[in-house]
Image 1 (cartoon, rainbow, N blue to C red):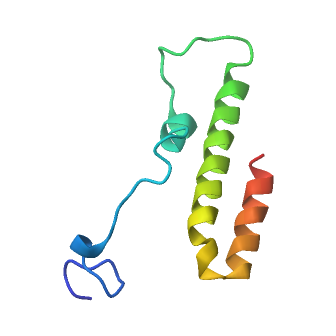
Image 2: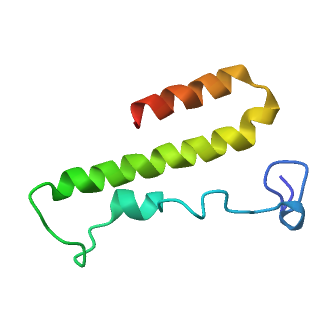
Length: 87
């Protein structure tokens, strides 16, 4: 593989790396955060799990919208199934 490529026929300079999830829950933070600044309450772990699943759902929804133009029905059905699980 040629250096400086992403495994596709383009270089890093040709790729638009727009963050399509920038106005949503930060899924990585929501799913891994043990932030001591967050309030602790009886359902704290449920709250964190729900926030994590909300982030996953929003990410999948954004990816689905971007990928629907590929017309790959198997991929879209798979994304839809993952979205059902994260609801």
